[in-house]
Length: 114
Image 1 (cartoon, rainbow, N blue to C red):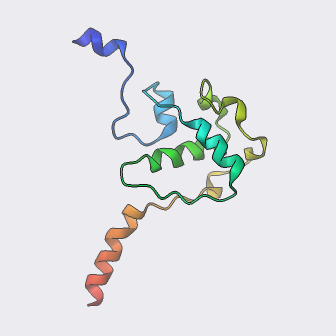
Image 2: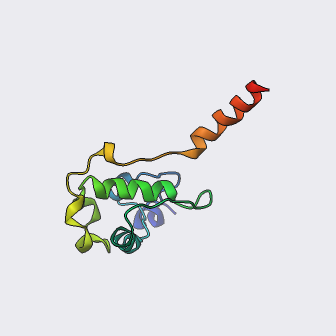
């Protein structure tokens, strides 16, 4: 059993940070070709997907891309398609709102106002 585990990469269960997954060489299903298409087609994107559907990992992937961490994308579909104009983007240029962190506060405020 132990030998079997050593031969396969680790699954990133509960890990939503793209850079952590890539640096640790965990299993990652490459969907970056869709990111390249999205970036070339739209100037603004609102991500509205069901719970547990990979939104946080996608935003983390975009953050790494916009911050110019090209080395993390080696071997992925987007490697040759990283737009030059992304260089110079800082972490302050990326907006990430986690609704799950806001929703409990809203419920508490509603109860308090009654």
